[in-house]
Length: 253
Image (cartoon, rainbow, N blue to C red):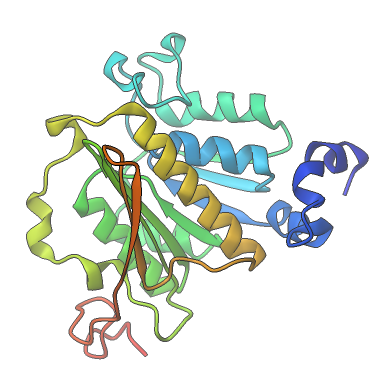
């Protein structure tokens, strides 16, 4: 590790749980982030600044004025730019040592799986169930850990799924096809700082996975109610009838 890196990450390195070994794991890691919107913004900024060595950014959208209320990785001068390029510039400004790969397209199932095989952790920052289900499928197929988050109105949630652990549920164990019709923040709204709370939690869970420190949210759903400022944790188990990771799906153990 270079002297400049020792100084940049000194506040993390001094943590006994992290130390130089943990920081080196972050520097050696590759994380793929799906979505550079309200959740992807804080996730990407905290991961880049914390020292993730390689970030793969996936989004096919452009920056709009209505995004700027919550998508803090972008600025007013980025309107009409591709989100992945706007985010790349901001993240390199935060940490020029972070390698950033951009994918400005909607990946199909095969492309998602191909990319997932190349990374250590997947992070879902999307805002719709179709994408979440697709990312989950790639996670199970490639046995790549997945950090999932969602936020709408004044409510948010975070969970972690790791197909390498036999007892770990997958995202489809938690939600069924009927959830596909659920509302999005573009339809119902969302309070801006909520995305920062949930996105920061996603970044934290990814760092814990990579460094193998602390207790993660596998088999747990962390719920946050911004109106009452209360967190709750709900436990859930692997669904034996799950069409993605259940024994009859071909993706189970």
